[in-house]
Length: 410
Length: 106
Image (cartoon, rainbow over all chains, first blue to last red; front, side):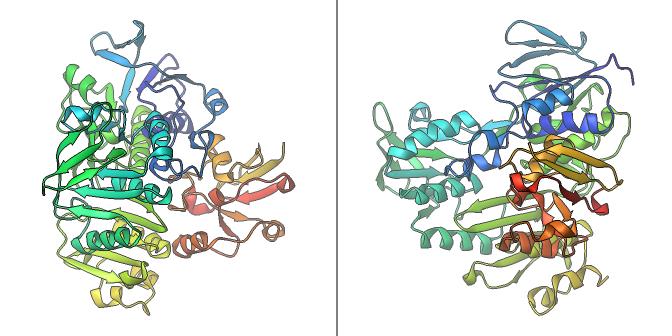
């Protein structure tokens, strides 16, 4: 590797931040430039909808690394600058301030943006999205004055926002267009648990219902629902999914299919000098044996490590087991694996106690686990999933059988 | 500023200034101490910041919270010295604290 080489990273989120550190950790000696369109150095996004929104942690504690740490790593951070276009033949990118930056290797870590409501009301000042610090600073201001919060979307972001709303003393309604909460990601039993838990804490959960129309001039003042109901609102939080930021890649002629398509080494199929990682990357995961796009910090970090190895000339395929977490009220939810294709759900513990784990099995093999207030189960669950352990369902459900004992049962 | 000493799985000592109030996971991440990933950012959800506290220091630290205990219960290579460094916020009186990183986090 020549020290004249330059790796240019576009996107200063979790993936980009991890990549620049991993490159140095793996002895990369070239120049490293990290370009991000937000004004801050890379910060942690998960607390935005949790501890930061509820005011438990301050801005500084969100930074993934201090400014001094990037200096020590000899990483040049360009914040508040967007990349306009990629010139693949010239091996350079055009910045929105008119400058060009040359690269030897380009890593796209462009992340995603919230899917917006199609209605023009989406632009009104009391309609909020959750992705960036700026989003939250705007949202927190409204939160301090509002009494009625409407959450559109019953996924993790929406449910976390609902929990913070309740904590702030707001009257909260959650609308989910699908027949149940968390419909895309969890078993019906888990959806039912979260619906009960939110209701028990005062959230008005309405499933199978969507917004028909918004009214109000300056701000949205009320909404009419698909079931005919009319709801007055002071503020709205929209959590209806993330769209991957693939425009740069598309315009550069890279393969895009709900994400920038990359192999298990994070390299794009069209141009080996361009890699993609994180929320924007549809990557080949060697553990799942398929192309997936995963919106999760641990996955972004693992993809970054894979890309760092590739850039250092060591080709180590990406085989990480995806995992996720969510905090709502006093409920600590930890999930590992992907449940797609499960044929049996086994519960360990009683959901009524708000402390239990759900194991998704296929042919007796643990595909994924949702642990609710069961961190001890979760840590073992990670290993059950990673090692594709085949279990006896009755042992899994029997709390007198230590979970750890199932690890060695095969 | 008080210092904390991380001994990584290759037995390399990293002596690092740690600002009071900052979590020891964050201190390790800021300084690229190998073996401390801090994947969940300090939410006590991943145990990738697991450390061993040297015996003479154990009693000078606050006890484990129930979340921390539960996480450790399921983690790898855990013993009575085990702590999650994200749950330890640096204090002036911890100057010289020695934390060893498990070999499994090499």
